[in-house]
Structures are given as structure tokens and as C-alpha cells.
Length: 534
Image (tube, rainbow, N blue to C red; front, top):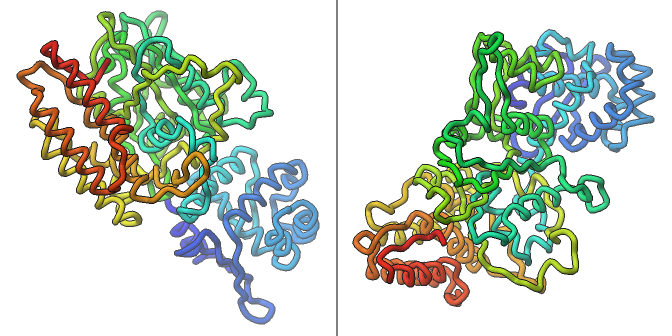
């Protein structure tokens, strides 16, 4: 997909009404034709355009009757229905330039479907095209938002949920480990619930529509039960699994985080039944529009089975056609608002995790139990969550390094020292480095204590490094006393402690997540074997 800057620039070459995206800042500069005394230029923000498209969508019964440009009805209806003051003013004095700009933006968002439309004469106002344009502009506008513009909800900032939220934003694949009954699957449901206003039906529902639980079965040894498979009984057709159905639900609601909970994830070998996802999640990257995209989880095939898959997943004929087009068509990829969370118990009935799984996931332990909690409120008091808190706009370290160089350099110095202390079999590489940088940067806005007092940036960095050391480093360490020795664990403890204190001198080691975990692992080594997993 061509980026908006290039798309508008190319369109403007053939239009007497220029419209170009600013190189710095979220606004579009557009012009009149200059036929009445010279060309005049105007600017309108992306937020103004978004609001205007929403206003058109809300009054589509009126605007769909004037898709061919007619100055009087566009001026009158714009003045009546456009709530944004900039758009409202331009609709009366620069009616056609605004019309042309709106049409061009809708064309861009829906390319290549509207390539034949002349934006100076016609505007395509189907509900689907408007929705697509609004969603893509929302994503683009968020990229221009100053990094420190907003403050996280105080409930998130001071409560136990911050590590879950920032881990998800860093990578949308999370493992929740802990003893049975600690509320691992419940917290996934509550995170999904927190994406809705408290007075909404979805918040009050037993199961919010952005939440799905799939119970893993011990006999799963491939992806047929989760993703689906091709049946050749009475012809060739695709039997669709629950994962793909929920994926499409997330695809159709891109501004709402969707949570898929794989309950008792390690009752079967994850590498076998979830192989496609584990591979595709590594293809995540930013496209030219700033969206996180992946390779297809199911590629295009000219088969009856593939057609039956698309027919079952999509009800809109136009959307089906897009997925059934071989050249330049849409593909079933992982949407950036799909969050996968696996709950994990470790006992004699479960499988351990391979390095392939641990390297791709963030891991949080839930072994602490407060028997006095949860007795006064029906739901977890997380605070309002949304795209900004949960959906990351960075995938690799390079996406955050330039804008946060000093912070990232501190994290890298710490990580290099820890990596030097690791045995060869436990050393980390670029994938884990990227996760470290993303997690630290995503924690920077959470800089208040429970009383609302400011926390120093160095403390926030040290706290985040402590947490992700447990998530990504210690979770890899397991073995008997020939592979994991007391000396090795002592040296690693010293390195972590010195590294955290070098960043924040007053860091309290007695509250350190990673050092407490190391102490537990050392105690288990007395039996001749130790592991991160309880």
C-alpha cells in the first residue's frame, strides 16, 4: 500500500486542487484552483478529517445522495453537519477543495479499489470505505502524537497490572505461569473487559466480545483443532478452527484490542499445535503507514478448500473477492490488535517449553496469593485500556532507539553485562535484545508512584530491566547441577544487582523480581536440578 504522503503528492500532479501531507506534523495542506485571483493554501489536521468522515458516516443517508460534486448541497450540508470547526469553515468558503481532499483521502485508504475515481468530481461514500478510511487515518494520526502527550490511567500506573500491559505492548504473546487457582485466565478476561467503558454492555457481560478462551487438549499434536484443516469428504472444503474465526473478528475491529486465551497451554506441545503462529509472529514489521503487519498465516491457494475458508470467514461479497484475488489481494495475516495469552501450569501432566516458544513470548509468574483481595469488587479495577496502552507501534529495537538513545544505551550496557555472565547455552541474541528495548521504552510513561509522586527515569528503567530479566533471561535457565551451578547463579545475581544499582543507586534489591527468583532457583538446586518454572 502506498503511503499517504506519496499518494497525495502523485494525485495532486493531475488535480487543480492540491492536497499534500506535511512532512512534519499530522496535517494536510490543500489549495484552491487559483481561478479567481491566485492559488491560496489551507491546512487541515488529520483529526479534523477523521471527525468530518465520522460526521458524513453519521449522516450517510444525506451525503450518499451527493457523491457527484454539487457546490450548494455540499456547502449547506457541510455547514450543518460538520462538527469540526476547521472543516465546517472550509465547507462554506473552500467547498470544492475540501471535497477533493476528502475524496483523495478515501481513495488512499481504499487503494487500489477506487483508483478510477476522479476526486475532483466524485467521492465514494460507501459505509465500508468510510470505515476503512477512518481506521487508517486514526492509526496514522497516532504516529504524530507527541510521546509524552498523555499520562497513563492512574489505576494502571500504581497497580499490579502495569507489567502485563507493557509486556503485551512490547510483544502480543504472553505466558502466564503459576500455581492453579491464582486467576491466570481470569486476568486475561478482565484485561479484555477493561477495553470497554464501565457503563457499557460489554463491560458488564460475562464474556466481552473481544475475549475468547480456547481450552487446549492433551491430544493436540498439530494445528487442525485450533486453526483448521482441509476435509476431502464429499468434496474439498476447509474446516475452520476457532483461532481463525477470532482472528477475523479482531481484523474487523482494528481499534479494539482482542484477547485470545489458550487455557492450560502446555497440556500439549505448543511447538506442534501452534507452529504456524510461532513462525508468523516473527515476521512482524512496520509498513509504510506505521501499521504492524505479518506474513499470511494461510497463503492464497487456487483451491476449493481455500475458497470455502474465505466464504466461511467473510460475509461481505466485496471482502471475499479481495481475499480470493491472487495478484494484489488481501491475505489472512495476524492483526496487530490480536493478543495471545497462554496460561501455564507446570506438573507431571504438562510439557515444558522449548527455546523457540520462550524466545517469542513474554513470561510473567502469578504465584502470589492475597486471600483478602477480590471480596469487595466483582471485576478487577484495572482502569480504562485501549489501543494506546496495549497495541505497540514498534516491533524492533531500531524502531525506538533513535528517539530514546540514552535510555536504550543504559539498557544495552546492562544487558551486555548480564549476557556475559550467562553460560553459552543460555546466552541471548538480537530477538531478546529487541524485547528488552521495547519493554523499557514502553514503561517510560509509567513514572508515578501510588501517591501520584514522580518517579525518576532511572528508577523506571531499572524497574523495567529487573522485570524483563525475569521474563526473558531467567525463564531460559534450567538444568541439573552440572549445567546450572551455584557459582553460576551467584555470579549472575551479582551481575544483575550491580547492573540495576549502576542505573539507579537506591534500587531496593529486596523487592527485585529477578533476584528473588534467582534465590528461589538456587534453593531448588539443592535437589540437583533447578528451573525458572515452579
